[in-house]
Image 1 (cartoon, rainbow, N blue to C red):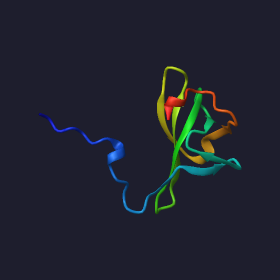
Image 2 (tube, rainbow, N blue to C red):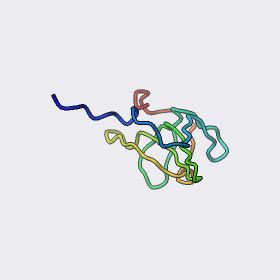
Image 3 (tube, rainbow, N blue to C red):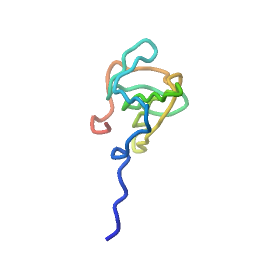
Image 4 (cartoon, rainbow, N blue to C red):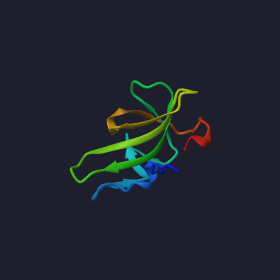
Length: 94
C-alpha cells in the first residue's frame, strides 16, 4: 500500500511563523468566518487565518469566491476591498 501524503494542516510551519485567527483590516476586526470582498476577484471570501513570518512578511488566507468555483487565496492586507458586516455565503466553506 502506498504511503499517504500528509495533509497541509499536518505539516508544521517553519520556526518563528505566527498564525492567528483574528486580525484588523481596514479598521475592522476580522475573525475566522468573516466575509470580505477582494480587489480583482469575483465573489465573497471567508477569512481563515493571518500569517506573520520572522522577516516581517504578512498575508491573509481566505476560502470562497464565485459560486461553484471555491478557491483558496493568500493575499496581502491591502488586497481587501470591503469587510462585510453580514455573512451571506454557505457556512460550510470554512
